[in-house]
Length: 82
Image (cartoon, rainbow, N blue to C red):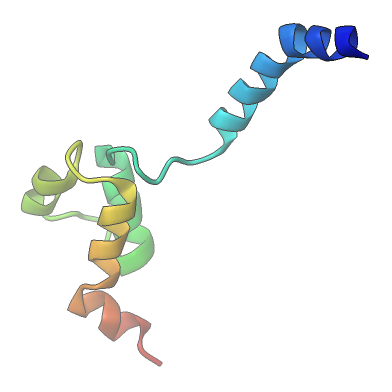
């Protein structure tokens, strides 16, 4: 049984870990320009991100913090209100 576990770790575990990491989003990574634009579109229905917003967040703000900032905006609150 021990040899089976050793074999599994040696031949399969690294691939499994890599697959899981590739499929999961890391909300604490820095947002790319594309991700800033995507969140802007999805949460605010706006295609164009103001240049100052892009400059302030792309490569500097985590996905989690950017999402939190957008949902706290008055514009989002108005759109999301019942």
